[in-house]
Image 1: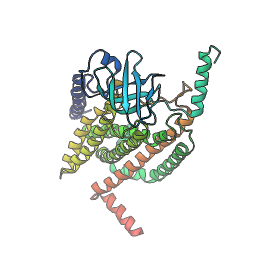
Image 2: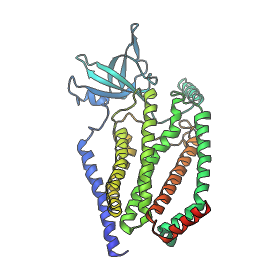
Image 3: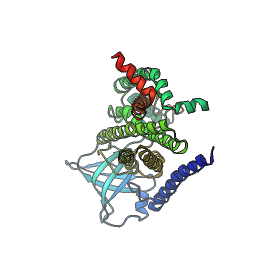
Image 4: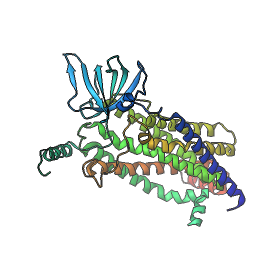
Length: 150
Length: 250
């Protein structure tokens, strides 16, 4: 490699490295501010001020989903398995919303510590499977829970 | 190996070598895309909770990862152009910007159409989606910057520098769902070890459509680069002879 090429190579390298370092520092400075939601644990730790419009994310706790009256009002518990937070919501739910499923809710925490959501989004994971496979898996899990051999 | 590499850097050699190669690549691409899309959209089993909605992954995932890899290729070409002053590398980089921006746009739009029925929203400003939108803007910015110069050399140089700066965005897009809380799920692992999630009957069609889209990327880049070669080398003798030949045959 001629010295001129070597110099160009250094320039290219420093452009890439320089921008990478700059952006890395920027992202580091944002800290966790780039998260799209708070977890129930972060809320329990008091990271959110009262009456702030925020998003929370977690799982809809199994058996916690309750329909209030005849309307579209529901309550459920969002959990990250460590901490829980009760959520109340009135409105249309996404198709994927169900117990045991990820959920992201936007709203604010009221005086009673209940998260009053004004919008609900469903979060799903990166595992796709067919209905048959899912049914077989659930049956196997049930057998295992019952104490039999899977 | 190096000789072949240097030869490919010559516009004339690149043009002549790809003349016979492109039709075959195009045929293979068509076949792969047809198998992947018909299989994925028509015959793969529906997902246990998303039903048929999830089928958009056969387009969304290849175009989204394509948009990232095309950018990586564009950056390698930009670096090669800056360091070794290879003209063909710059022409390939120019072609990459166009198809990369298109792939990125398709990924964003299909993602929105997937997000509405599953998440309940077309768009959310989470880290992964926002970084992908930035990628689209960077692509458009590279194209705009290139066309803003009258001098070809200045345009190439400016576009190359901006391309290299934008590389930093690529790992951010990929790792966004690991570094931060996002609504977007993480990347699926192909279920070779774990039989339960992402079984072969779901991901094999995705492999076909993925390779089909890779083929499509190369077909478009090569065709676009060939046009660019003819345009930039229009004063070269071999191009003029080629034109004379073609117009003589017509």
